[in-house]
Amino acid sequence: MLNSPSTHSESLPMPQKNGMKNFPIVCVGGSAGGLDAYIRLLKSMPADMGVAIVIVNHITLMPTRLHEVLPPYTTMPVELITDNLEIAPDRVFIIPANRDLHVEDGVFHLKPISKPRGWPDVITVFLKSLTTYWDGKLIAVIVSGYDGDGAAALRGIKEVGGITIAQKPDTAAQPDMPESAIDSGCVDLVLSPEDIPREIVRIAQREEDTPANPR
Image (cartoon, rainbow, N blue to C red; front, side):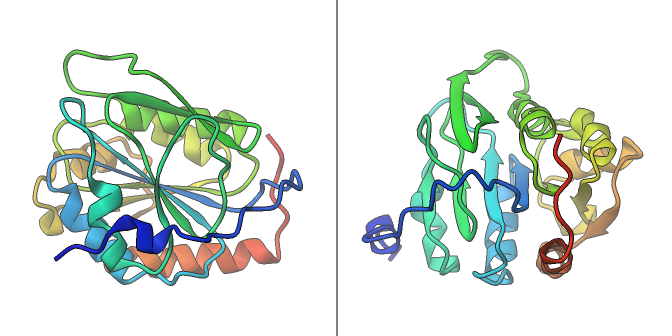
């Protein structure tokens, strides 16, 4: 029996609007087989790392249920992104179906999907937005899925000092996306979902002592 998402969202403290948007964002991009990777990753991830987790999953034909399915696997609040939702650390944010996701001024912006036919490129769109409008460290994680969404944006992540991670293909239900990321030549680490949180913790701890470089 899945927990109701309301048990993870009631009486949540609102993030302070202090203009300090320099904590790390972790974009976890996936598609077919991604649910298994998200669960394995969240089960191994501490809830107090000081990072925002944004899951960008390909769903175009029906509403996503990830915000209902994932709460049992993490103590972090899991929220479905709405337009102008403020980004805060120690939370998991889920992209809604059939929308492109952007960030600006510390909030999410949803726009009509720019590629309604063929393989979506919502991961690439979001990562490119981050490289332009986010001041904190960026961590791009590409997990199980078809096609190669996200790979085209990895060079930009590295150019602004971010870290790029691909799921180890032999641990992915569908290795196309992680393999495309690796083939781009712009992946720093290839890890199983259980090992990715350890690297995120290391990066987050380093960021506590290193001011973010504004872009």
